[in-house]
Length: 103
Image (cartoon, rainbow, N blue to C red; front, side, top):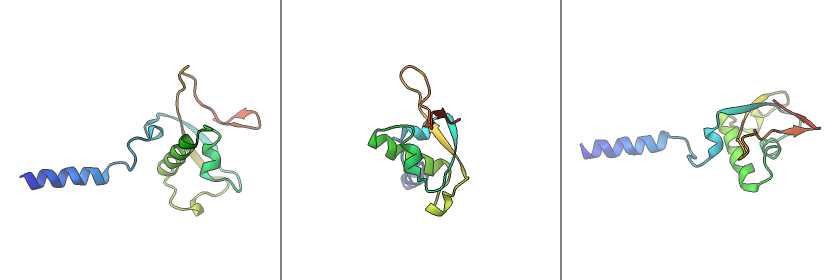
């Protein structure tokens, strides 16, 4: 019985999301972003945060949420779901491109 419980716990650990500390993976609000020619996931993430750790976490979340397996999956025209976090003042962090928010 003890071995069965250990096997279940190990199985759950392997099958659970790779990064439980990434708060972007727990977001319920998303922006839709159309990928432009030459853009990377990091470029898109940097529209939402200027913090290096935040860009890394958001990039990881974008890859996970949109099932991006390689750079070939990130082609111009593809629509990505980008998780957005609430700020302390309860407003959404919004991407700004050429002065317009992208929703």
